[in-house]
Length: 122
Length: 108
Image 1: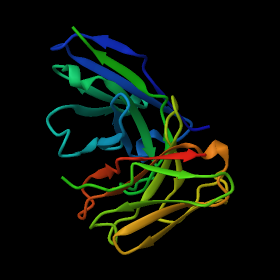
Image 2: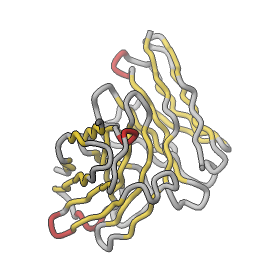
Image 3: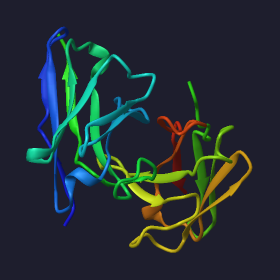
């Protein structure tokens, strides 16, 4: 069974750093792109960026380029999303999701993590 | 930046047909995907490649494409279909993805 299990909720202060994780299981982790999606409170989905764990090829939406870093450790089948200096506006639910097709950048997201709620408040 | 445009809300009575549109210039060149999201849950893929339905998705969900607009159609809407629906595609060069603003489907 394909599963993406994300790390737990975080409460941070502005200016702090953070790295959240997404562990894949039940499939070949290195063969499928993994994307990150933001959902701010009461708002819609936003495509942040995507990584291919096989070679760490990473693409970012222009809106998120330079704001976050996406990485992966294929040895433990885990993708990451990190911030070096959080802002209150980073408060949101963050989802990881797997691309549909092995090896392909294109496609929908067929499996999703349960989401990680990040709260940034002083 | 590239945008997909959806109506904020659509309302239908049970048993009727709901149509949710998504418009953008690059849609003739890039496939569209549709997701259903219920409160407190992660999104679920309901249509891929404009009109294909994943296994396990009811047949009442269908998708179509015409020019710069793609449409999600839910035939014989049921109360359980009440949710937010998002289209997703890519910019014209396929470099990055983008979601539409979402449509809240209300079943009256």
